[in-house]
Length: 330
Ligand code: UDP
Ligand code: MG
Image (cartoon, rainbow, N blue to C red):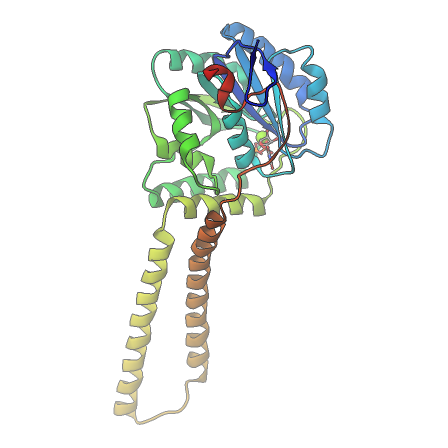
């Protein structure tokens, strides 16, 4: 036994693999999830831990996990003070991961744990990042699939680093890569973007994404649009440039239209009519200006949020996990 920084004794055994699993109202899936993880990880054979980050769940999932941790010694728990969102929960889980490699997966088993042995094998062969790419996705509506397809195409056109399409948060990262991710200081955490910003030797493995085992998705369209905006504005300032380009075009159009009116007045004589075109122009220009303000505001707001330097998440309680793998360095 050794002591961590808070003076509590912790098991000295350091895990090789840390699974990081954010949970938010996932009580229904946990009884299915735990035995499947246990079975798969037995197959992998390495000493491991699974860090469940309770993102302010309203159900008794946390209590259930505390009870199950007597049976499954690999359960580690981090409970956040409220719902901070998946990205913050992931950051918390990564902060507490002690392993040499971390695997991020969803509690709902849409990311099949049965892929983990293959991921570990690829990591052992020498890559730092193993990305899981969805070959198929069942249980998701065509609207969600189409919008996600368009979003990734758009994001990649805009951002400087390649964010692979059809890749979610399900992935393995080496300690080296994890360290780099944790050093990125931003508060707005679009994790997929941060992961790909880091780079490092990567292998992509394809898998079939299943439907949720139980419960309902936590996402709605407003949330997804928010995440999409977050992704685009965190990784690109192209929208600011578009705004400028829009301004140039509307100025050219306005100037051209002005010249046309002068020309018309000179050739056909002055005419006062033109009320509809005036209204059309004013509303069109007003629209362009508002969009531009909106885009600008998005970035200013982001700068404001970053400038406050608030913590990304707050922890309510922790069970047997050690932050930053303190056990490893002790
Ligand atoms: N999640 C979370 N905090 C939230 C929303 C979701 O920790 O505010 C977790 C959730 O418990 C699950 C994972 O993020 O483990 C993915 O959520 P979900 O399955 O609802 O998303 P989808 O698979 O539909 O994209
Ligand atoms: Mg899911």
